Length: 181
Image (cartoon, rainbow, N blue to C red; front, side):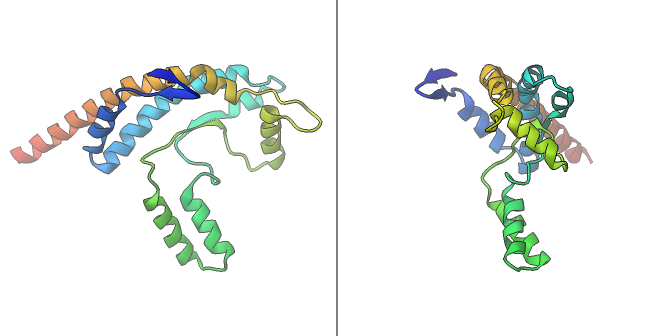
């Protein structure tokens, strides 16, 4: 990993990506999820330590999740568009599945405050990070990312290789058992 203008340059990930793509898709997705969840942990921990301490509720709501928020999931977006356009549920489900299949992303992990059905709590979360016309922001997520992104990338680099090796070994054991029977 080396710095460049405006960001970072990743080195050594092409080989890991190639090895990951040799695994069955479901296995590769699970390897990716396990790796990204581990890598997201330092960002979550830092965000919790930086979160405003009013009631402590915000700190407790910061999570690592493999479930995309509704406004990030291409399937949910496609489903909503069909329903809002007057389509039926069958058409919406078909559109959702097609959008998810077309998505190029193998897996994603999200770090931040857990979704809440309470609109007031959701608004408070946004105002804490970004501020409002009446209150300056007290950022906690962006500084957490800024301070822990290199750690997360190192974890990904190390853990992804380990997880690929373990998955390959498990697949070889299963194949050997099938040959014996």
